[in-house]
Length: 262
Image 1 (cartoon, rainbow, N blue to C red):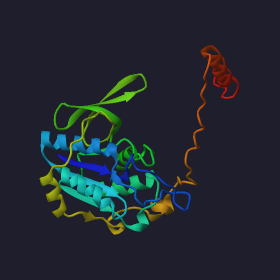
Image 2 (cartoon, one colour; image 1 turned 120 degrees about the vertical axis):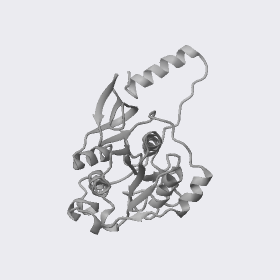
Image 3 (cartoon, one colour; image 1 turned 30 degrees about the vertical axis):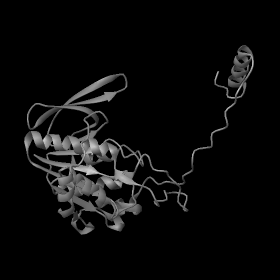
């Protein structure tokens, strides 16, 4: 089976974020970058599927030079091949632009199964995986929390919806986006880390992609960030001493008259 996983490098969810001088981006100084957590679920499911059916596992990413760090992590986990698109003219776009580039990169690989995380935690657009499927003309199931294989070409995907679980039967080739709970991602082994250092990462340029340059990168972005701002400072809490009944009456008054939540 030919499996492709799309990964993105994002700031760690534990990083202390500061807004850059332009007011529209994050200051990268001192920010730890990691593989997008939901992409880790996609990667783990790809590894499990290859272990079950055999085949090859390729990871694909779009981003600057540091993106190779995320790809090295995937190679250390056991990916066979890594491809990156880091040409400056193709970067800085929105989710749809990224999907166009990734789809054209993947098209030449002729995959049976494409796995993505359901969302990237830095932008939270949710649309890149489904957009890849639409561009490639493939069936897709998003936010998958469970997979059941009937055979190498047929499977059942479970996805959580409000108040219920939706069960979808599909045939490969297909695109799936992974949700938390699909599996428990493994850690790279020391031998895997050492081998990953020697594996090549293939760079894909615009000349190898059939992409209209006006539809990708900053030039083709239909969604843009106007500004970023930190959340408002929390107001200092209030304390009451003395009679408990009087305190309850005062708290209720404040909730009703000042906060207007009652």
